[in-house]
Length: 353
Image (tube, rainbow, N blue to C red; front, top):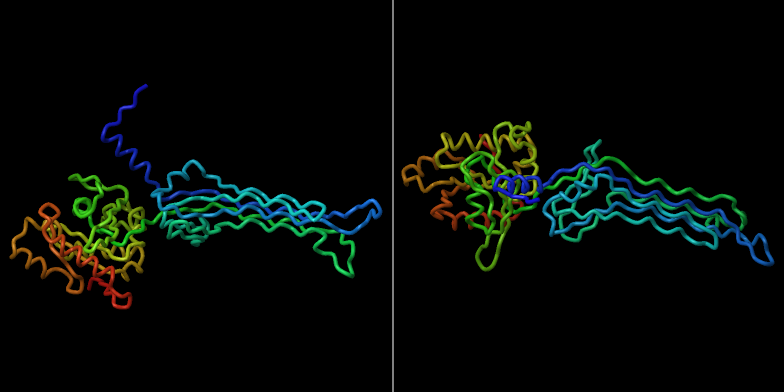
């Protein structure tokens, strides 16, 4: 049997392979029970308690892996069950610890409880390990309870239960700069021009269905990461278009670069609509630094540029660019680098009047 992959098939596979949201059932291991045991020797049938402690139940652990970029590998592991600890035994033998489950996830992953929505773990750097669901503590054996007044304790502790529940694992792309704009604003073209990334570029809405990352080479061998995110539309905060799938990735970006095409009917209005969608989704997004780029500016003359500049918000730095002719791209990189290295207390945020 032969498999023939057309361009459409390849795009479908690429889309299916990017998984940034998954629901899993997790359970950490139960602790082993302590042993109630008494030592017996040749000359003393009751030589005293020697029951060992039970072993700890296995943890469920998240570990950051910089080589991963999706949660696809969790799609076939919906039940993540750590091993129970073994019971203690005589001769003060402690039970074996349950085997931990280590879940490797891409950087920028958040784990939260499905019922409460509480964020329980967050992975931000390679090799970071977080005990997401700790295993149950093993019970104490009767040797632990021996005392001068209680020489033969006839009891031991049971192991503590592990934790379990349905959890949400969610990836939020980590990038220094996030590109924000309506579909067909020129975000993918800009990314492919200033980085080595090769996102799909086409003349129809929602060409970009998954986040695309690229490294921008800057002066003196410096660089920063920029993300091309799926296009936003009015009502995205209510789930329209790609809705929340797009907006949650913006939360990780230090700087937001708004792209508005030169042929827009109302540049100021388009910017305000974009900012309003961010505010409705999460008001904290307005605390980020905003920059504004007018794309496709090769079709403008100086007079039109001056007219458009008068429409734009005065407190948001702007630049006219063209990814086709490379117009303004050096200036854009300078603006982005300056914004990324600006002291936190001097960041200027912009909100439409």
